[in-house]
Amino acid sequence: MKTYKQTFTELKRAALIPFFVIGDPDFDTSLQIVKAAIDAGADILELGIAFSDPIADGPTIQKADIRALGAGITVEKAKDFIAKVKAYKDIPIGLLMYYNLIFQYGTEKFFADFAKAGTNSVLIADLSIDDVDEIYAPARKAGLDTVFMVTPNTETDRAKKIAEKCTGFIYTVSLLGVTGGRDTLSDMIKPLISRLKSITDVPVCVGFGVSTPQHAVELAKAGADGVIIGSRIVKIIEENLNDKKSIAVKVKTFLAQVKEAIEKV
Image 1 (cartoon, rainbow, N blue to C red):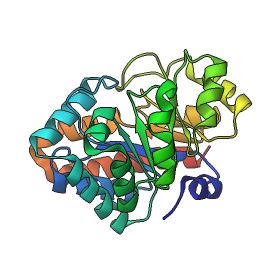
Image 2 (image 1 turned 90 degrees about the vertical axis):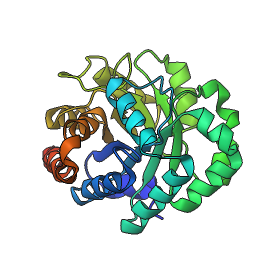
Image 3 (image 1 turned 45 degrees about the horizontal axis):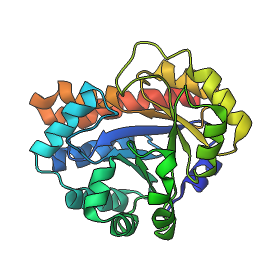
Image 4 (image 1 turned 90 degrees about the horizontal axis):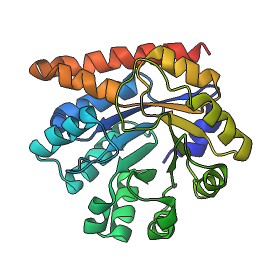
């Protein structure tokens, strides 16, 4: 299974990391969309498992969660989804999700089962680094990398503590607030990338509010090792629910534009 380390070592530019909610708007359409993202040149996938109380997410991702849950997605089905994606192409897959789902499934069993399905890491949005012992050992035992979040208001000593526990990459939140598309990048992100680069060699990937090819270019120039684009893509899904067959094509076109832009940096 391809690792984050292999991926970041091979790339001579920032990685393109699209985010999708598994099963949005339904299992089969979602799978076609993710395959289209791979075909467009995604280097890593960030996938969410729908949850009823996604406190880190803004309205766009919340509505995607509602669509996926309404279409019958479950943790078990999400595992099957990952296996199908992995069978299509061996590409690193990170999960971004909430702790209740893991706790209910059984922590050690969850990590073991999802590692077997093809997952590379599990980022838990509502689990503080102070509670890292809850998941670090079982994740590593299962062979998963660990990924935690740093935000613009994370103090440097705490960022070092987080970096020490990240074996995959640091998920760097670009702004103060929840997920969602933005017209401009937060002016807090470039200083944060520089600060993280000065304290760790762990790859720094930036998400939240990354919405355009130009945003991706700016982050790549600032030294980001990866750009994570979620709400902008999920918005494409939302805007084309009446023509599901067109969604994969439109997502592929958008991501190809982003890929072309960051390849020129």
